[in-house]
Image (cartoon, rainbow, N blue to C red; front, top):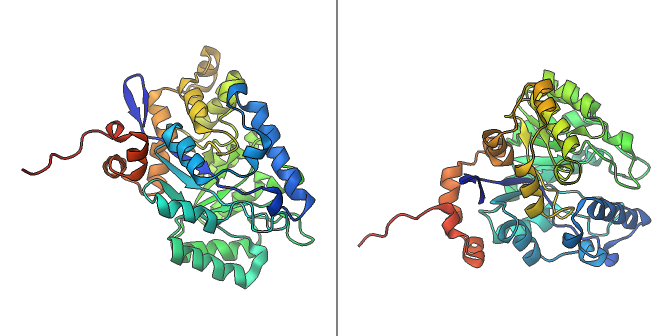
Length: 352
């Protein structure tokens, strides 16, 4: 657990992946373009001494992920956000079943989210039911720019998508995480447009819509939608690295989010393995708004606000009792492997 200014900060990394972009798994040139675009993001923002080689980046083992996220990375828990890209990768890029394999080894550390694509029709609805039955998912990641046959994307406010959102309500899946942000080659930027979140959020007030990447580069559009839809949240994945490389821009983004959404609707995400959470969490915790930004927006980015962003808001959405979770993590395998037990306080005294 991260320590800052003498206080504990419980970190739930709301956006992590365990992907396979190895050459053996690529079946379309888009798969190679996709991972190389990811790698450009990685080298563009990661401090030089923390950068991976491209071959490391294509496929990493589960031992490395557990060490990077929990052993060295300050995070206490992580939420898997699947991205399939079946047109590009033979076995998918980052599938729920692959993520669940790792989560089953560390059930107290990982939350597995599902996914859906309304273009899959009845078969997709049955697959969503399977994900709920097998993994008890509380959330889904949706990737509206994913290619499928001749289609290069779909909309969250379509009749077909609404049928899936109705299924989410029926199954008790409460959190929908649409990727609405920077495009990745060769996908289309406009297929990630945040506009279709508006009607979906209005039509399904019982669902929470965690807009990943806060709509960048359409931050204004996202904020205006989120301001009127109380069930819309902002996920900081991809925005967070700006805390290190462009701190003034990060302060501006946080000013807009805190002004329009407030401190209870912003969630941290590292987007691992795009970036390791260690330096990213440190950068966000050290981030400050300038005096001019504080005056303009009338908000503060202080320690109490950061505690909510780093973990408390995600805990509320996923029904995690942080104090109870600390007791569980104190004695789990990850704490034993990396010597983390002391971070979670003292255990109950054994009976004599």
